[in-house]
Amino acid sequence: MAFWLTSAHKGQETDWIQRFDPRFWTVNFPRPMMASVVTNAADGLRVDATFLTAGDLAGLIWDSVDTLDHPLLGYAPRRDYSHTTLSFRWQSNGVVPLDAVNGPTLTITGRDANGAPHTWYVRLWNFASGTNVDAQIVLPFSSLFGGWAAGSGADPVYPSDIDQMFISLVPPGYAAGSTTALASPVDAWVELSGIQCSGDNAMLKIGNVFVPPHGLAMATAYDDCVNQTPARLIRSIRQLGYRGSVLHYVGMSHYFRLASSGSGFVVGGAGDPLCTPARAWHTAFFAGCHAAGLSPIASLSYEVLAQNCPAAWQQLAANGDAALTGWSPPSTLMSPANGTAMAWQQSVAAAFAQIMVGAGCAVRFQIGEPWWWIMADGRICLYDAAAKAAFGGNPRPHFRQRRSRTW
Image (cartoon, rainbow, N blue to C red; front, side, top):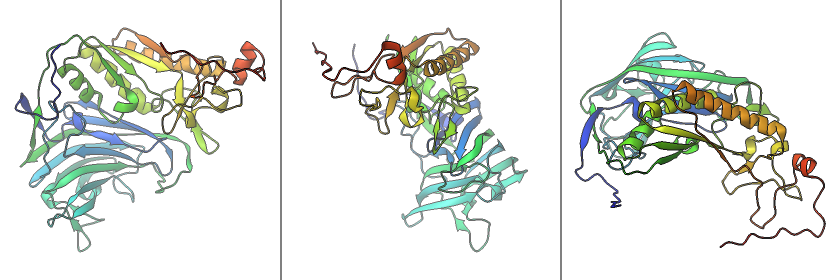
């Protein structure tokens, strides 16, 4: 098959989108909290977040430069927001409201009129009309200012050289830098509807190439795509020529619901095994795949981020070392002999299957890594309590693990 590796758009088909198109916003956040963003209308988006500690902070982000899409599909860079106005209806629940200290703030990073790096902190409440949880917000970039209020202490935004905009979302009782667990997890949401961009620079050129179907299928992974909208991901899959199956690894670090345990957070609590942001994202993703004629396969492995896995569930080497992968931070492998761990795995599989059914998809499921881990030095992790109870005893003192031959 002929192919061409391209690093830039070079005159291929283009189209135009409105600046701030909901499909191209992203989210960012520190683990162990979770957040996701999905499009819920042609001019709307929804952020779901689960806050776990008092210091959690999620950001809804617009980048002036597209760093995620294929070079033939991305939107053109444009850092000039002069005489441009962004407006939308803001509705929220579970986050600090617009009028409060630590309320939603638009952090703008770029350069000032002299070309020096600068950051502005724009309080959205200063540009809102309505209540602190349901308001119309109008952001005229040539008239924006940072700071608590207009006046002598305000910091006028220089709109001609902006890199990124970041809307901060924090839980009630927010304390910057705190790792103290909240009394209970807080599920929060924010919706931006009626998103409109007007004035100068209101439109962006975007690559609109359609690669002919080439017979290959796509593999995706939630841990890698968690910051994007499903609509953006599915657009890329289709326009790059992929058809048929989409093998989607649900991941090992972002999909699950966590509960406080000691100084950390672990999986395996009662109720829905999926966190709200992951459930919202996958509902939109599977529905989008179905609408696009794609057939998703949900892939679930016996792998969980080690810091979130109950100690009793982990596979162990004979000396008690946990089975850890090479990721940083590492994931661990759950023991197939542990009934509690496997019951939780089954509940996860059932949850994803139910989402697929609700989206109109055939239930296609893949199980990954249902075996015992082998350490880099050849030791097998077959000695957790559940495995020893199932298979009997401890290793003989003279036992040596034979290395597998590679052909």
